[in-house]
Image 1 (cartoon, one colour):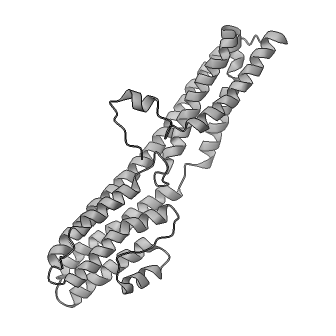
Image 2 (tube, rainbow, N blue to C red; image 1 turned 60 degrees about the vertical axis):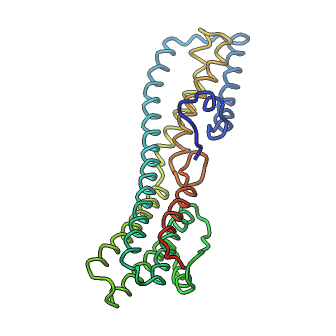
Length: 287
């Protein structure tokens, strides 16, 4: 994620990183080249005189604008839901660390294992969402073996958390009520990673994306025809500006549709992970 001051127009207006400028400019340039060809043909070969073409394009542009707004809104909803899920992960890990540091204060070794597993959860979740190998650190060998023997590290970590809490319950150091309360937090962590995977593995419906892109390309490619008789050679910059705006809106939707990939506009998972690990680490027993 790019940090910026929303009150500063200068830094945001001239920013290149995160603006998808390269992708949008290239596509707009392709459309602009077609506008140059159409304009040259209009003045040198055949003068286009398309009656009511401007009104037709205006009507289509309105419908296309609604499709683009819907696409961007859906993508932002997914981005914001992802942020809420990772915010819930922050709170759940904090609550788990806070509560276990009280109820397991008399068992410092068990507390260290529980807190180390809690610290490991966000990094394991991030690696799963980005399809990267996860390297456990700070865990006891028995926990490392148990977690790495499964093909889904975040769920395996939650299983080990439940195991350690259950061991304390069986030893009579945790009441059933406290165990149930603590184990509820591990359930929440499983629900959170499941929600993230739902967003990550479910793109927008293919038919919608295909139709939107075809309509967008057709609209931009035919835009010079109703404009050339009005604007002349000024049609070229006009087409470039319109296509840049329309294609840019679509590309924004693509950029934020999956907020976990690590792109410039995606969620700062590394920063959130560091925050969780530092917060949970503050509850580790001294000595």
